Image 1: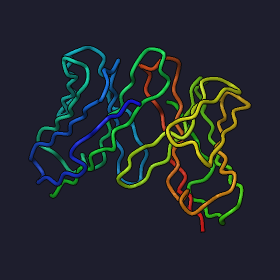
Image 2: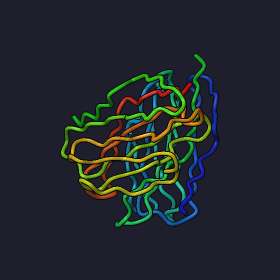
Image 3: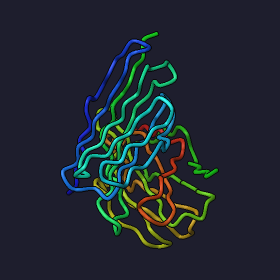
Length: 112
Length: 113
């Protein structure tokens, strides 16, 4: 079955440093979604990427979808304490697929 | 805003009990999902439903069943609870099409003693 690998599992950064998490799929994806889960909270949808090579930005967050549609990344510039949480990528393999396959997440800690 | 409501935030049950976790969504979504979340393992799909009375197994269905008698409600059933089912359970709903985001409930932290 489809697998989505996400690294690193944990990342500790000093406030103001940059942060990146990477996802790799064993199969070509039709789209990839990113979610953020704050401590004690539930996953909240951030963004979806659909096109090969797509890049989207949300303020300090930059999301990329690889040319082969098998990998993706989330980059945060100048982290803030409000960025703390676990970031998940989730991939879908096709138009007829109901499922999202989630990566295991990257837990980000920001040291003030 | 989409609202996904899970019946309990915390639940403690005993081994062998039959446990019901309820989830209700208010957006007329066709698709509903049950996940469990464990440290280091991420979100694992237990079951999903794409329509009333329809259900499909996810990645880890063993020991669980589901019920979807009404569109807005999706129930997860632990037939005979065991300690290895102690976990955080998350329900999600999604509109039609796999390019739609999933909306999650607050989760139920279930402890089986």
